[in-house]
Length: 260
Image (cartoon, rainbow, N blue to C red):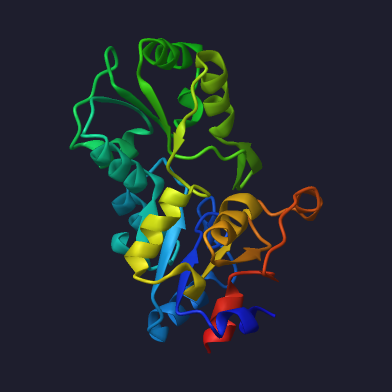
């Protein structure tokens, strides 16, 4: 039961897309869950592989859906990438990310001709051969590849959508390079989230709709992983994965029931 796992939890990490909303629509139980979290006093953070928005824009979009989530409560892959880049000595970058998300990398020098690092996120319908070839040429000149994540697919109102993992894999194959991955399920990302919570992994529960990125990634860090059966979750796809969640819930509304 979910309550059995949460009884020992001193903090929560929660996925956003597919758990609290899909497209521009809040999912059932999402508003009640956020209200319950805010009243609980339990430390929590929303952890997302969304690469198309800044945290400020994301907070505004969520508010428009009735989801009151502050920018400071959101940890994104872009934030993790910035931490990586700072550790690398603030190299010159080519941010191959959506326009709104580019502001997260404003502190770095940009170049599309002699970058030291290419940062790749989702650019939606702007993917084309010209863009891929520009990235390929930079990598062949010695640039390093940073992937905000390498997800296979994500949930939109129209159904499952191809994610950037396919483009990352293509660039890796063509250049014989392995990308640094900054998002879930990478340990670096989860380490940042746990440090922000100020809690050890054993005291934290992660809830999300992605068995690999959310559940397996969290379990590998020593957290408990709970799958939420909304968003991209599909029983027939889950059956093919060698991932066993610590618990399952039908929707994020279960959090509100537990906290109440």
